[in-house]
Image (cartoon, rainbow, N blue to C red; front, side, top):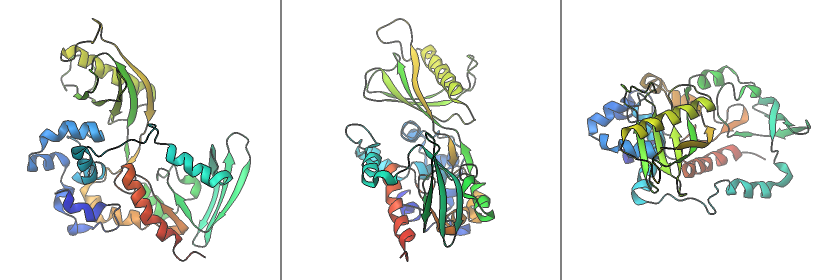
Length: 325
């Protein structure tokens, strides 16, 4: 089923239809899609690999974006890989070395003028306060495309009308140290709705990270939390896990869990409704590509896994460079 949609979604949505041309299954609320095809048993895999709860109320398109056929095949065929020495920033470091002083790190765009005749950006260094004027024929934006995040670019009515339709997706990643879960084990935890502990029924996905006693956490709380609140919610879920008796403490009589590190990855998401898809939200989004000499890439514009984001960027760059002299 998902393979049949590849031409609509990979590596981006250039060919995505609107109205009645959209495959009806893509617009089904995902729980209905699960029931229709009897795939409830995939819940743990979906949760661990993508952090998505199988009961998410969004249309199936939301899940396809984050758990499409390349991700499924990568999981089934064990073809996911990590760069050595286990550092996914190496590519950016190499690019930084290549570009040299043309890269402005720890800097922010503080002024911008964009038109269909080029772009002027003023960039300020956080450390020194020094400002650099950047004159460019075209601009490629890879940051989160929200109204607030891109406000400095002076968004026009067309841009605001599209970007204001994003849903906000709270999401955290964390490193957990615990003696409750054996190494080489992943756990997808959902606290029961009638829990007597007082903890909310958050979904929690726990994946061993290769170091004894340490695990990655994928946590989508479904509501806005700050970092400390997210930590407390994670630890509350671990207490529920300890109380279940299914995972007795390893090497001790006392259960121990600690959130060693946490990072807030909350941001805009494809929480569009079926009505928005039919009305052409994807077309409206992609109509911004090239508008005011500005182009966009990143996980908000295509199925969000790293190899595909690079493949999508490969479709953007020729369009950006077209007719430039």
